[in-house]
Length: 575
Image 1 (cartoon, rainbow, N blue to C red):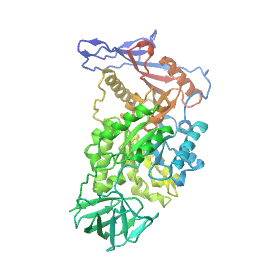
Image 2 (cartoon, one colour):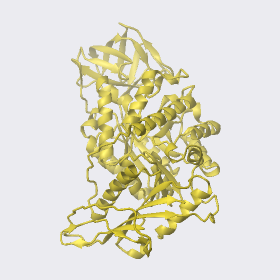
Image 3 (cartoon, rainbow, N blue to C red):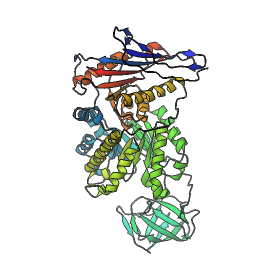
Image 4 (cartoon, rainbow, N blue to C red):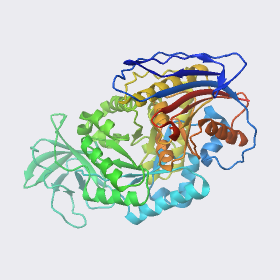
């Protein structure tokens, strides 16, 4: 039995009305209908000539078991989770690990992949080009030879004002000690001397102003200006790390500085070209001030890369907060870099800012990563603080798409344990939210400009509402470019989303979307055939059980329909 609603042009409005018919895939049936669905939606299409057909179908599907195993694109980790825990046991919050000396061997990378790493982040501030290339090759080797699905992200260094004391390790600044901040370049280290990497760093700074290092690791009071340098007294003792970041404060307020530095340096562009050559999946741009740099980079990638590399903007400055919405709209995703952000805004504002950014990203349907110091204590200790676990849980409760480890995995002694804490904590909080039946009320902002895009949004909104109300076990989406999978994810449904695509770039991009398990399969224009084939394959692997119910959504555009878009919702019970 099927419920079919046809969208037809009716003057200046389109009316979508669910209507009962005794059909399955267009074939008349003798049995009576058992499911009804109706929705009315008015859209202005006075200038549109696009014909659109939306289909809602409810049926039972029976597997013949004739298809062979091995041709379904499950990664080994998701397949194991599904076999052990069922659909509702699939973790929805994605995990990003920064790769560093502590986890760069093939064995360590595989351990991270097994433990749930979805995206491997390479910080271009550190290590050599050859080192990064070796790590990328190892990850691709694991994906190709052992069946993992780990995406690769490079994180640009960005143009920023940094200070360095010339030592490879941290240096302690004692209270009342006198230090000299200078733009003079010299090799090695000098006692009580700190180099700044920008000649104009001291412009507009007065005696009595404060220099805060790395958001409060140490604080200095400016005593006097000496040429382009500053003579300062340490007022809050602490550690000075190599390549530390600084901010200037006056009377308890951040001293806004516009150093007129481009978002992408010459080195950044060189790293981007390297990333394109190495077939990476994501580029995270540091110290984004506005949407222009993101738009410029995306345009560049369109003309130079055959792959759809996604561009993420890092929110880590006051400028980026002031232009948040335009930056989110221009990018393919956002990273909330709380460490650097905490240098520029009061610490007590970080939680509310994180919540606001996460909400805006959901509004505009862009994945968001919560990063920096999630489990900072685990760089040195085998267990986290309870406050850190609560912080992770809150990020999951806010429905962030992903959580990221930085130093915990890159240089820490307990990277695997830190990843395990993220996995178990996020899984438990997801379960808690489901048990509370907490509705993620979101004022849905209309994103689509064209009629087909608006219809796709409405279909996904309705599909998630149906899935939650009916209590289905999983949502299957068939997509070439991932658009409808991301729209489904935006609504944060209770059941997991299995996204079937025939495009490797789409599979890797969906690795960062909340609740989406991307699967690489051969897709045809025959949607009915696609559904039957994939359900058969999953059942043949023993990963779907009798009487489980799935909801199916598709944005596959059959070539034979010209400009007519075929989009559908189907509900199936496995028999």
